[in-house]
Figure (tube, helix red, strand yellow):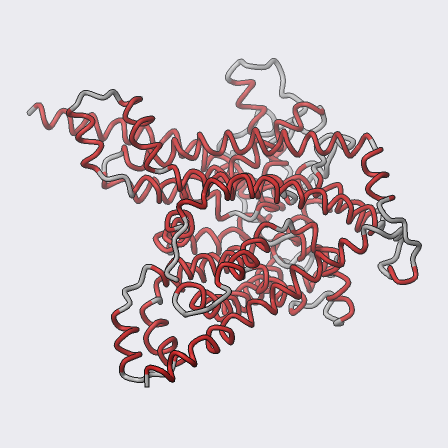
Length: 281
Length: 300
């Protein structure tokens, strides 16, 4: 009986803790969702309505309509992020394999070069990158975003994958070696299947990272709507319609939906990916 | 057979790492070099440094002489110090909470904590602009309802409040990722050590400082390194929320440099600003890395 009481107490304070953290983490989002469902114009009504007196999907119509077409930006973001994820996984799993597993004379030097790049603030590289993309004729194109973003993933991706590779058992690799597999087949047939969960984590992080990338996306798109990804589109729209918060909120909700759903579904891998880099080294 | 493999492995190692090096060279090291060159020339509305006047360290001197620089440097430090401090403690609190709640609710709590991290920073900036709205914003209204203020403050127009508002919006997102990092560390603290301390009668606070903190120290250091680095180079939240305003009160080095690049089209001055930001981050990184180094391990 006493044990039951103690158990119940634990549930009560668990729910208390969760309520408190939800207030911090979710209240801003609640506000945006609620605003997006208010009839445009009523979001400025006083006293402030914590629960809309009238619900309306009008703002969603506007944001998907010809005036704005948020779906274009979402599509662009999907294209860019998917391509970046594939490219980054390919490049970083190879480099991480060298760092974590292969005999290589300049391991420490390579690692320093890679991690030093991770420390570079984007503001240092943005102007020459802009000039470079311009001279390649890739301004206002999605390729102009995809290629640099693959490179931007190298430091963190190599770090994560190397941490993952370092934690894999060596026996299968050794067996492959003894059997005379050349290193590339060992990598492709043995290591990659073993590292699938790690690759998946790194992939989710690369996807989300390039989904949220802003400085380059802003600079490369030069205001052209068809080359804008979600972050740039939302910012542009919120600046152009500064008093239409119901519309802007609807845009925010639609643009967040894909990533929030993704993070919730892949939560386990996201946490593994983020913590692997922090814990293993 | 073994002999041949041993000979081949280093070649494969090089082959595997070359694509990464090409990427780094083109999109990190070349631009850094170019920015260094830009910073030595007077580039007014041009990136054609070959035909521009060479001014040596003139741009740096101009930067040092401007009051704006010192103000933005000060705010960069203030922003980083306060936001990292808050992120760390809020993040740690949330991470520890996930271990304190009943196991069945752990997953739900983690999901809640992770959500702010998924939101792109610039989208957050737009969100917070609305939350800080003076007439009908959530934050102002809550403060009024709580009886803390008579009427909603001008969050983004008052210089001091704008600084706080930017920092808080930034902390909201980053506490989330800090928390996830620390969860990883906390998960590695063996239960039996905590239990042993409990048996020995150590109080919660003592257990935290004497057992948990030393055990997760490597994680804490790596977390602080990444968090400080990101805070020092923060750009999106400031660009989107205040645009550096009111005036240039909330400009950090990055947002100021961006104005020079793409606002005033002064690549030389912008580059000088950008490089100063980089040097700051490098100095701080070295400071942390010195402390992290003992924990590094590789199979060589």
